[in-house]
Length: 404
Ligand code: CTP
Image (cartoon, rainbow, N blue to C red):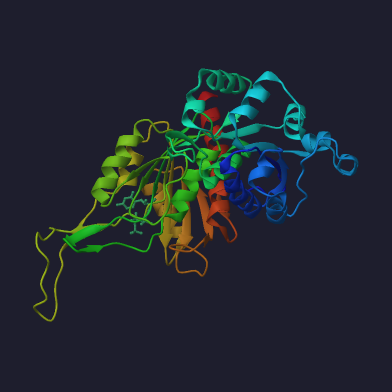
């Protein structure tokens, strides 16, 4: 997600400085070229060698280092950065930036950059609540600085409250989000993901192999691109995406209720969930005991949530998925028409590298304008963006057509 991006990480002197080592690892894993600038007090907490080893780049510490100045220089670092992230950002550095004080390499470089600056404050709870800190932070916010607010919890100083440096994974997500194009700003995107479970008795259920990865990747990507996102998720083993309102459900009935609830406000709907088509006619109150050689289960049809949404579509852009094992295009085209969809993302789940549980997918995209596009095998994270690229384009066309 950060391939080709230059991220300058400023580390200031707080006990949370050790957590920034993990942030470097995550940024590098996302493909970023990471350059670390440490203040003098940061070096009291963590040795520059740690950051140098993890970032695979020299760590910058001094404002007047003649060799460094010649080779890279603070202005060059300021110019090359796609984004600055300061983690942890102490009350001191926030105060200096708010007042335009540039008395070390980090503050000088930040003052000289035109790149977005993301601050991840970490400090004692009373410093965090101090009106002087608040004023400084608000001033920086007004000037377009971005913040990842600290978490609540036990603080190193013994106090409990807000002030803990956010989880490095959350900061990394905010870096990705800050660098993403915001072509879904103003949109309210509803995504459904994962399987549903239909209970037979208190300990057994009918379900499917959906991992939820595709839907989660779409929800995450839509949020990065500026949308307000509601994710209705069946039972999966995934962390809810940062900044996404996630509603957990179990059965198709519960998914229907939650999804239709969020549908009213949605401008774009992506139904990636693998909803169980049938449920047991009745749920046994007690465990079904083993008796005869065979057992017949009577199943009844679940409501088709997407078809219901198709009937009430209005101006919304509706995307469905089609999981098939035979006649992919033909079956997907039928679903597109039958459910009144704008787009269908069809995948042959019997193919190697596609469908349920896999990290990758191979899909065909069919749209109501008659277009059919084959996408190559790609990671679900990348595919999520590829799908949203097409959604953004088609939504604009649809709205232009309506207004024209
Ligand atoms: N879907 C839904 N409610 C259901 C069944 C499916 O909203 N009860 C949605 C899925 O989220 C997906 C699309 O409909 O976006 C197609 O789902 P799929 O399982 O591929 O097809 P079905 O419509 O269930 O038809 P079939 O199982 O016969 O292929």
